Image 1 (tube, protein in one colour):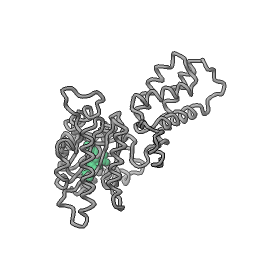
Image 2: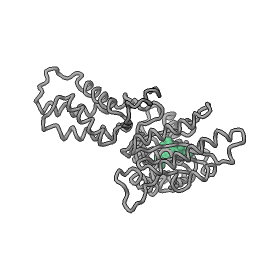
Image 3: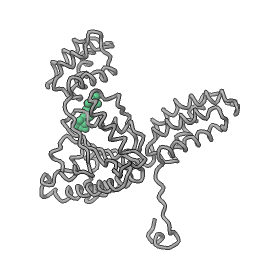
Image 4: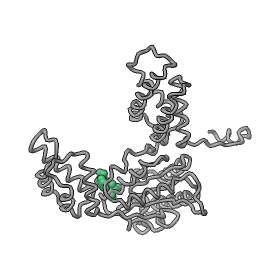
Amino acid sequence: MPTSVKRCQALQHKLIIPPPRLQQREAIVKHAVSKLLLTEAEDPSTRVEGLARQVANATAGYVARDISNLCRQAVLRSLRGSPTGYAENDSKELMERLEKLVLHFEDSLQTTQPSQQLEFESIRPAKRWADVGGYESVKQVLQRFMRLATSETPLRLGIKPPSGILLYGPSGCGKTAMALAMIGESTCNVMNIRGSELFSKYLGETEARLRRLFQAARAAAPCIVFIDEVDSIAAKREWSSIESGGPALRVLSTLLNEMDGVHDTSGVAVVGCTNQLDKIDDAIVRPGRFDKLVEILLPSADDRTGILQVLAQKSPLSSDVDIDTLSKVTEGYSGAALEKLFREAGLAALRSSRDAATLSMDDFDTALARMHI
Ligand SMILES: Nc1ncnc2c1ncn2[C@@H]1O[C@H](COP(=O)(O)OP(=O)(O)OP(=O)(O)O)[C@@H](O)[C@H]1O
Ligand SMILES: [Mg+2]
């Protein structure tokens, strides 16, 4: 808006309308669906409520217009191919249409994007806890953090919710996967960015982007800011060489400032991942910024069993494969290495027979011989 307009006294009040929260999205879906289905009937109302909750959960970051577009699209899809003579007050038919609508919402969600998602990925990841095997105690820590950080009711005893959690540990151990599952399972908004993507070659642009990221998150609170590969924007001060020191330092201090701001405003929490904790500046892991550090190490035998079970859901195993045995012989393998083992075994199975449907122990033996761990 031109500053001359802002300066004139005609517009004295500024009202910020943030993107809708979960309950608000639910109300918008309910309203839009009822209007589109032309129904005030009693019967389908509980079904509409269930549907509204489901859609609201999946549409973090969507604004009211996006949600009503999505509803229109789903209703239109569900109408396709149905008989035109539709009796308005026939509640049986309405129920059938609602059932169909649930399916069409899933399709429509795949093809629509929230309009606010201009700069930062704000779609909730599709990963769920069921996609992450093993690491039960780590999962519990992350679930507890998420509950505290996104609770909309103020915590008792004057304790502020945690402002950030940093997952660190060797590469391939599932840090990103767990962070995505943690966010995917929550119902709050999300801003998702990689440290390396945030970097811009233009002077001052990276800092500006960081500020816009946190600004957007505050407007969408409760919101999780997920920064993968934090090390690329929060390197230790002595690690940045003299010539690149200037910009890197400014980015670091912007991040520190913004994270302090997070501590003061509730409803925003930062989740970070790194495989180079030693390269990260100490100030960033101070309490009040990333106040919880979680180390994710190579999986134990039990964790490997869990991961293998998850992997086996996608690639069926033949009866001669024993997961416990596989877990024993894969000591030192990370989650990523186990995934590669399955891929190699799959390739071996396809080499022996083009229409192989399961992975046999022979395939795993071939794959194990090919792995260099
Ligand atoms: N516990 C696990 N259960 C299922 N899959 C896993 C697990 N751990 C890792 N994986 C799989 O291994 C791959 C690599 O994991 P991920 O990207 O999360 O590792 P990372 O710790 O973030 O590594 P980096 O530090 O290099 O970013 C992913 O495809 C992920 O799905
Ligand atoms: Mg990662």
